[in-house]
Image (cartoon, rainbow, N blue to C red):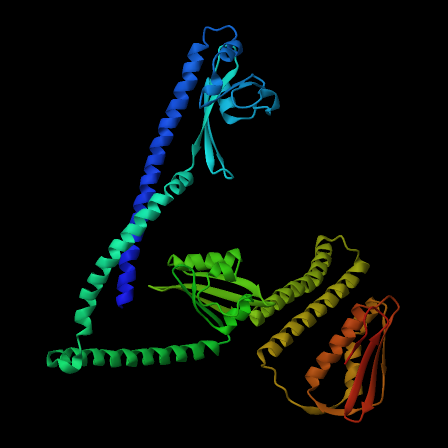
Amino acid sequence: MKKRIYRSMWSLVLLSVLTVTFTCSFVFYELFSVQTKHAVNSQAILLQKSLKYVSDPLSYLSTLKLSEIEDRVTVIATDGTVLLDNSSNPKLMENHGNRPEFLEAKKNGYGIDTRYSKTLREKTYYYAVKLTDGSILRVSKTINSIYGVFFSVIPIIGLSVLLVILFSNLIASRLTKRIVEPINAMQFGFYDELSPFAKTIENQRKLIEEQLSNLESKANTIKTITEGMKEGLLLIDQEGNVLSANQSAITYLNSKFASFEGRNILELSRDIHFVGGVKTALTGENAEITAIYQNKTVQVFFNPVLQVGAIVLFLDITEKANAEKIRREFSANVSHELKTPLTTINGYAEIIESGMAKVEDVQLFIGKIKSESTRMIHLVEDIIHLSEFDENNIVKSFQSFELLDLTKEVSERLITLAQEKSVSITVEGEPFEIHANQRMIDELLYNLIDNGIKYNKVNGNVTISLSKMDDGVKIVVSDTGITILSG
């Protein structure tokens, strides 16, 4: 403790000396810079006035002892060529046509610029004026940077610091002794008056330990619960830094970091929608997005938490999203399948209603309408069956029936469709009696044969073969079209 007090005291003194020195250097530097710039401006204006009534400024300037002037004087032609310079050979100097002070003086009559050299740690001040013949007279002067001024007084600073340290050592030692001595003399065992104070400190210590133990236990319980969650969970403070994250959240974000605690949300995700949701929650409003993480459709909820920040919850809705996709596709397919027979029925009905149909064609049109109506009934029945399967409401009753007869019966129901497609249906096999759900087998056969007809070629064939196996009956539905379906 004594060493800490001692170090703190003389460190404060040292810091004070450095601060005052640097501040004074900066103020003196600014004053010196202003005076230097004013002197350069005055020098340039004085030369401009002296050349105002001279027909040949260069010849006149040559008669002046410009080399003895501390400032640098340069005369630049209107095209940027250096005509005169009291510090360098003008022929060896590059064109000055792009210098800011030259361009400004050429346009406004005078120009000012300051350029800094990192290598020399110096900056040069330029002031240019326009002469009567259009050429530019420029006066410049190099000014040491603030760093140069500061480093130039380092010896003085060092000496001052050394003296201050020697002086502060004596004072710090005495003050430290006066502060620490009463504390060292405070021994609770020898002072009855301090016993209540000692007991209070001990009770506070035990209470703090108990509270810390309870907090640690609760924290471990919460961590165990969150780690076992399938849902991802993030707790974020007001600055966007992660306070807590479970393993599911780490997996969803697929970050390179093994732990999220203490990291800003921008380090974990660059998704503009995700970051936007976090910012919205931190402003006190709820937000929600749907994103793809690890090939899963995830719904992310962002909710504000008072005096803490925000909480982010990742919920896997892949199955729900897939089901919704299937439902949309199914609705589109059903709409298409129902639209075709309805269009046909409506067309034939309009022809009959308008009287455009011949008497001998009316019966044919009625047959077409009946055929398309039957097709619609089958489609609706399929939809009802699918709905029953989906809702798991179908009565799964089993009974014994003859499979070959059922196959022939289903084929007969599809014979009209087969004739329209110019497709023949062949049923092969021996009679087999099976115990199963007759309605479901009927649907299975109907769908397989129906597909075989629809996607067949003209004058094609659909063959249904039944064969007995050791553990049941094998049904094979083959066609000469683009598909071969078997079950």
